[in-house]
Image (cartoon, rainbow, N blue to C red; front, side, top):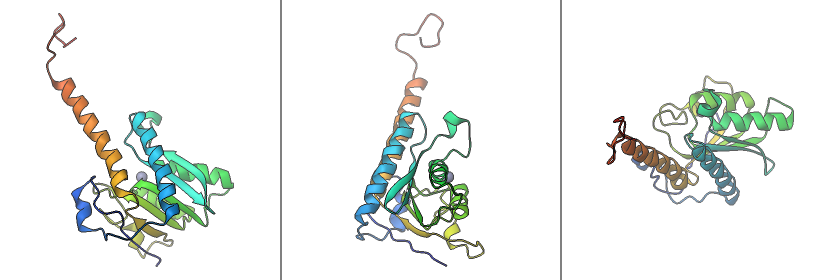
Length: 197
Ligand SMILES: [Zn+2]
């Protein structure tokens, strides 16, 4: 079984849960942070579209060959996670459903569906940023990377740019909460219809 988890970057503001699992002070390779920054840019694109901000890239031989932003709401597609979009684009680029020798970088710990797709694609290495204590399938809720009954495993690394990856999520949810609270407040100048104008 190929399995490697190295935590980096220190505390993740996304969830204090991070505190219990990371191993600090192991610097990420420069190329990992470069690819994760591109995934972060794609996460910010998702946020601007009103989607939960998650971004992913697939890399082969040091080149990005697939990009994805989370888009299940706008696409009316429960499978439209950033990782799936990046895998699809990379597979089209290579003309092959197997993405041998490829790495996948994603800002948030992948869910079970996405880890399954990565294993089907034979992704060699998965790098993620922030942990997802609700649906993470790389150790938070369950650990498919440690499941010896599955016939493929990818190397796994978590915590690359975790604070930045967590911040894009926490900023998004803080904004959503503020918008919701504004909606719930009675208007200081109610319209004649009484619906807050
Ligand atoms: Zn997913």
